[in-house]
Length: 284
Length: 247
Ligand SMILES: Nc1ncnc2c1ncn2[C@@H]1O[C@H](COP(=O)(O)OP(=O)(O)O)[C@@H](O)[C@H]1O
Ligand SMILES: [Mg+2]
Image (cartoon, rainbow over the protein chains, first blue to last red):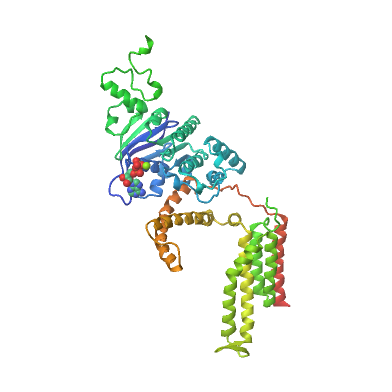
């Protein structure tokens, strides 16, 4: 698979900030892959998302160094409007993601398509589809301002995926959602991946991150601490240094390993719990 | 579809009526002519089913203004033919004439536009303006303001509640409420400013500045009646001009 996004030695400082928020970040995201970005609060995840979507340096000025390429082209060569068709960005904060010009959810989701100049009949079809996909048909006639946080989060997600960008950048989609809602959102994201989209997800819930993502990028105080296939990153002792939670099974397995239990491999998904032990007692 | 014959008109047709009334009362000097528009507007409002709110709005706002303007003209307009006195002031017939003329125009024009906003959905009107070339940014500003006003009202209620729990009086006399107004205003304005940039980014995430023409789910239809009415306004305006200046 080819790289769809590449960052080389990217550093960034906000206009009002003293410190570099991203420091010498180099990374590669493969086309069609599901990459999760993890890291503690303030490690620069949202900032990185803003760079990928072009909001840095278009909206937030500041100092940006290094090279960013999208599909082999320098990102600075793209206009903000052009990037909108390629990269969809669902923000962390669902309360600011309402256009403010539509008085119902259906129109709200259609808004991006109207801006892209999609023919009206097609807009109706695509919005219907997405309403069903994201499971918000029941909200279609509601005023977007009158939705709860979790409902807004889904509407925001729907408003972006309806535009069918090749790359989806999603910043902590589950912050306002209950466990079931979170799982549903992950299922939707997986469907997007199956459609061939490249997914870049910021998320704290490590069980789900391990379950769904192909690759992991670990940010620590603005630096890329690790990156690679999810399993490799989680198995690497360096991961412990980042002070990020392990998936529950991994944590238990690593503890058992420390106590002397032999493992075939380090499990990262719940389903692997039965096969990771050397002497599978169930066989006898 | 809207069944009401007035409401179903194209927003620009409604707008041009208000413009036509304005033009006509400026061309025709007679105050009787200008006053005559008022009952006509009431009839239109009645057909549209908004007569009650139309009249009550006018009596609450325009009427006071008209009374003040009329009295000012009556007493202070320079004129020699005195027709009466009140205390130290003299009423002149010139003042009476001018007062009638001025108030008749204010009433006609004011009522025409008040009625316009009663019978038009501002969303439709903005869409109509967009169709004839208003840039999307302009349309956005109008529409978002409309959407955000109720949102701000909700927010200010929340802030009021918060102030109340902190012991700030928010109910009672005008003075008390005015005092409570400013502590409410500051957080409201600050939060509005803070959200402007976020809003710009939100819009951008919806491809607001995407190159190329936009489409819209919201379509307005222009029917033959709209064309006929618009031509009628134009021809009548020209007719009035010709009558006034050439005949
Ligand atoms: N608009 C901004 N202006 C100045 N500093 C900012 C801004 N946004 C974030 N920062 C700073 O950048 C650092 C990284 O923030 P962020 O990217 O939001 O981290 P994360 O999403 O990983 O929690 C933090 O120290 C934060 O204070
Ligand atoms: Mg963040």
